[in-house]
Image (cartoon, rainbow over all chains, first blue to last red; front, top):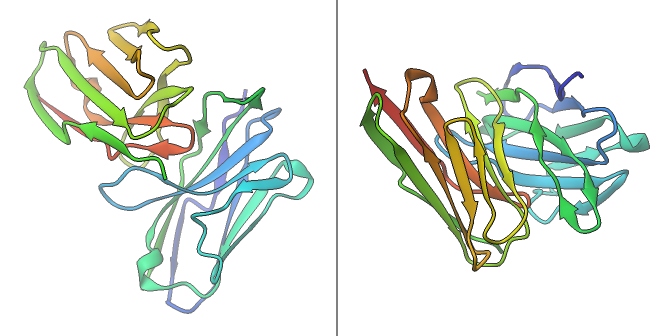
Length: 116
Length: 105
């Protein structure tokens, strides 16, 4: 079974430029997460989807970040414009959410973003 | 929001020693997950806990879901070099700050 796929693995951009990250979750998983992980910190949730619906986006900086999960499968996270403080690893994870229980989350390798 | 406190932040041990780390939450969790992250990789699930009081093992790893539903611990027995890494506890969509494990051969 293929794991969570993310691309690109690395991205270097200048500040004020846009950037987009792509995630393909494990087949059959209805829940998809985007996390941001700063150096030396634990992952912080940006947004959680159940199927196509964003059910928790309270930590997403909506002035510059946007996300979509069309058809409830792949997802894209976008930053426009990027700022220096956005440099981090962006992780995608997927799981199943059934009857109020969130089951095991499986993570992709992440995209390391460097904003110069 | 939910606060997760994980301790210790780092550990330096000798190979062969046992390791214990724990996590406490400001609110009740229905799920506790423990992950390990190696450099340049995403976190990998080690153990998942779903019931208060549950004790689950995975090889040399043992984790327990606290009775109060606000805490969990992870033990590693007889540590080996490949145990080096950062260990995270997690509730639903919330992660602790991690415990960095270093092993002296």
